[in-house]
Length: 134
Image (tube, rainbow, N blue to C red):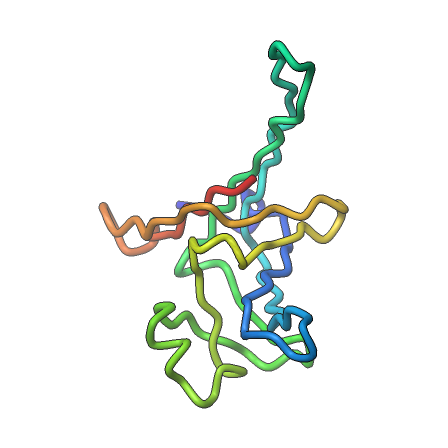
């Protein structure tokens, strides 16, 4: 079982909600008690070197808690339903379209979400989201 001791990170998830005056608008959601390791690396190639930094995020259904910036609780809603919802501020979502991203509280790295999956195998206490980003 994932304990709070094993889930030391707090992240802020930014869900893309649209544009206003040609600027992207995001809905921030603070997620506590998750695990967000960052993989730092460099790829050497003919034209030179480039960063290959990436990140993973593990959000557990039973342990991780999501909040709006004002402290009210938020629940997960699949992306298509979240986009159709009139009350987005009550929910958070995950999307792999490349516009959503997250930041770990004690780091400056911005990680764009590239893929995610919801793992529901085993006991309910181990159900979690696995989010990959770059």
